[in-house]
Image (tube, rainbow, N blue to C red; front, top):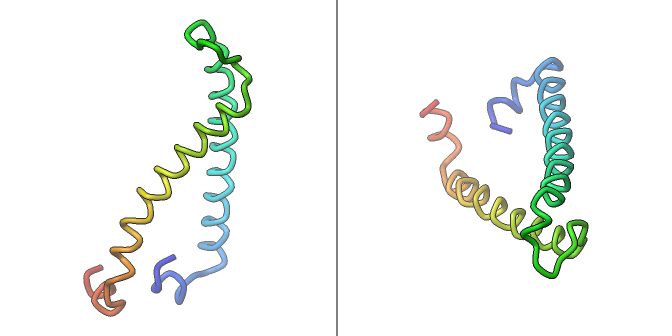
Length: 91
């Protein structure tokens, strides 16, 4: 949350933000379900693995999560180095 948003946030803004987070959770669940279905579709290409292998799903999710963490951390670290007053002036 931006500093300006935190200071001037209204109840409506907060509700919108929480709804957006809720939609993100629903989207995550849908993607997970789609991944499970896709694993059955490509089952003929899996050598030595079953489509419902939990270890493979866990490994893939962990790798994707690590990539997402690094990809989101780099801009966050860059933004954290900015002086807050300069960041507000740029907006």
